[in-house]
Length: 416
Image 1 (tube, one colour):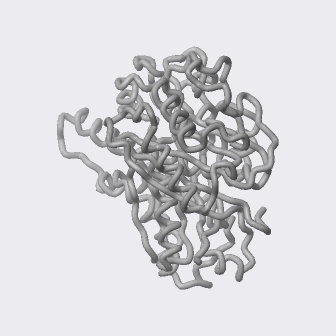
Image 2 (cartoon, rainbow, N blue to C red):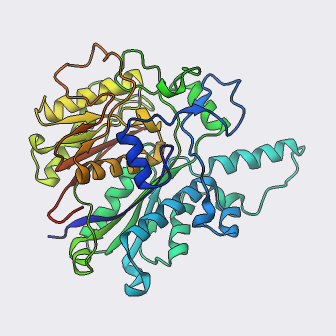
Image 3 (spheres, rainbow, N blue to C red):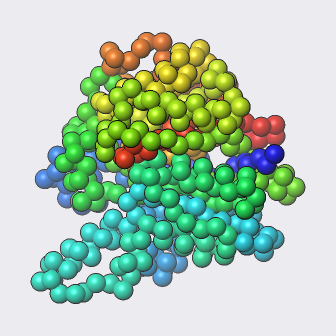
């Protein structure tokens, strides 16, 4: 049986631009939310977000790569290069056709799209589009540029399933390795959605918090006073590798991917099914593939965006899939990072893996009083990280369109 392990990690997040910084700030329960600085948001219902700070793409990208890429691609390249270095892989020691890239994004080059259309309108509708407009806009350009940067010639494409996207990418990479179609993948997702159109659009949906005078406490999954999510941005990258290939080269192994699943709500464009029927099935199918019982899962990083409907629907699904397992602990880390849309699953997968490595569960911050609709039997880690043995961790990511995705990670002998 082919096994798939994680041998490299990379991150660009509102909570830090390295995996180490991201993990330490998450364990410390630090909010990354601030007033939006990317543009003047004073006329918007929501004026706060979780921006990446002190991003210096020059560390990994040359001048032309920066000029010719949207910010979401720059985040992708930066995180991917971190993960590649972390994995200690060399293309010249492998067949480049054995190494692929499956990289997701929900919105792609949103910032580029807005800038080019604005220039067109402000230029009296004269055709002054940049020759890089379309390449920078394309949602698959991040995966393409990662492959070009490193010379990776295997399977290369971009799945899109809204906020479930990077979990989908991880699942696809896992399955292709199990099918014997690749030895290694760089996978994950990136998003750069803090822009007028993106913030304005989600604000119009009334999905975002309006706690503009108190940004650090605005994202509050499960709290009775939650009023919506905060936009986040950044990227998370994982190197997935066939186990025997990793073992033979003496690679460090963070964890094993043991189960994945996707289902569809078939219910509503933007609202989850209130009973979480399909979300529960996603978790059940992932556990079945992993050969695990619900009682064996130590930590569940829930999607938990801090919306009224979404948080409760997901916990209804968790109750269906797990009951009130005495071993399961839950946290919603979007309380610290905001919602990275298509990149959310990837950075939360990293937190699941690090929780296995360090036996610490990062908290859900800003929980002052649990919503009365949440059963008290749930073990939700609130406000302070929990030291607990973690052997199995699960990550949920759900998206508009009714997409549900689940990935399960397990520690193995010799992992970090």
